[in-house]
Length: 345
Image 1: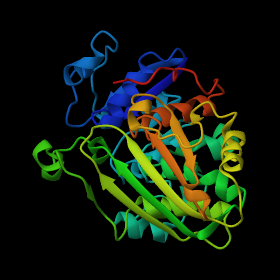
Image 2: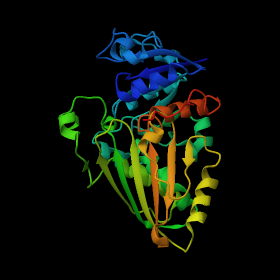
Image 3: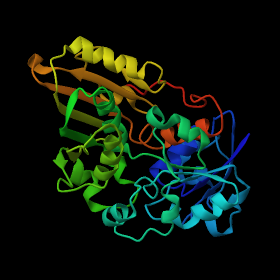
Image 4: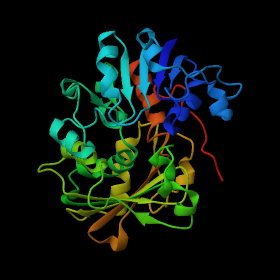
């Protein structure tokens, strides 16, 4: 059995980790930490876990996390980098669900996250935890940077086209929408129901932290670096991300050929589902499951291809993908503990 610890278990990604790990057949949850809720039974804060998890939140400063095999950080940006070196030195593997180890360039990370990185020496070692491109590296890793939710949906949508050199990498557009859980569980006036209900808006158009993350990965499949316009939007729902991706084709090609390309690229991927041509995936199709659902369109058989990509931001965009990475790092079948059917309606 894998001995697992979770640092920062009171947020949405923390409780999502607990929901999945509570019934993972190869996991024993050793500790769930929270400074603010230390001493509180987990089920008191999250009643959905009553009868499934008999644990109490503990103070991370007093918890012996070095006894774990793997530790998840479900914490704000800037937290994991404070504790990861000590855990790694003790032989504990680390999966960070925040952004501390996603971006390789220290100056780029510090620019976008507005703080000094305290262990830049680990950035080169960290493996970007998108199994669909880094499975072999993840299997050997001791430090995995779990991808952001927007980047997961966007990268998986553009990837087959860039790998096949089918699109102009200097004209990529990602128009993405997220539910409010993507902003976290903290109290915030802009996230109140009276503020987001019956409304729809773009935000951070001049620059979002996920933009350099997306570009870093896509640049690995492009020369020169990609020119990407990324515009996120907030929609009045709890879970889900929908990314509508636009690119110009470099040569004449039919929709059937584009669809076949996606089928072939992802045919062995257990958590990517390619829908029939001209389908319109909905976020509710993947609500509560570790799945990215994709459909491709070729409007008017012109020069532009449109890819529709949907995920649950808390599962394939966070906790589910983290468990997928844990399985790979531990030599378990990748789907262990992650099978299920989406919630609908």
